Length: 407
Image (cartoon, rainbow, N blue to C red; front, top):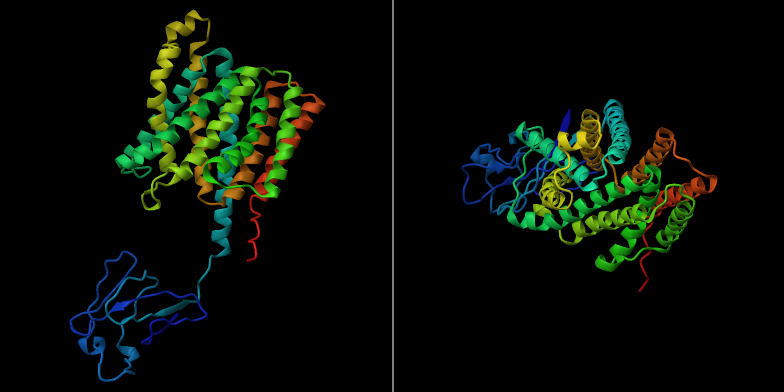
């Protein structure tokens, strides 16, 4: 049952959850009354006697039985006439335990897929890069597969095809450039050092985020955030000094990946189009993937040539079918784990997503060490653990806001 209370008052406030409806009544016309609905298109005609307002009486009242029951809730609109608000209270308000359980199961499944796709991407990608030493071409293959998947999604209406303006493309272009560089540098690092070491270095992303935000956005960190950076930097330094697969090319490639990936986040805040024209995360990622393909393709052909043909691979003594299969699986997982990451971000807060990302990095490091049997010394393991603990601490203290200064 629903109870409806109506009166002539600019604003009525009841303790229950309100569902607002507005009747636009024009005192000069008694032909019809319009009220908003969820789709903004509902129009009902009401008896003129019941719609009209007596201008000679300031306390005129309407017969309650004369009003038409309207569905809740509706958005408010500007009106030139009187305002009537209907307060509707439903006994079945709130989510049921079953719906909450379903949402929890869905969210848990998404986190599991996020980790699983990331693990398979790192394993298969590392195998490809060990046999095929052309990281630019490998990165281009990943963007190619991702672009094909995006086009299929739009063509089959699995996801709504966006309408992109020229201003949006101009705003997205810098994001696509740093996205391209970030993934390219990551593959360059994975081709040079162990997967676990690359992800240990990439744990320094919060450090670059803080520095770039302070430089370009004027967002200065709190003392708690600065304190959380100490174990991150110290842990990465300790792990680097004791890493068996350490080389400078792999180290600086991973650091460059941190810089470019965090630059993408800063650019998205500084140069993105207006809020009313902005795109959702999945659509934005899909557009960036296609733009990255077009940005990287000329550079790949110019620097590495066409090296992914069966003839070249056979001449190099590489198993063609195996390389193609692993490259395809790695590219699928690369696109899938980022899509799932954005799906999770739509359901949880950025802090929760950041914590989940920290746990994901731990899972990837542990599984890669076990799969590739990477030698890890006690001091190296300690450094990695300290760095990851610092990342977890950073994700928690980001919630602490500085106290406002008293005037």
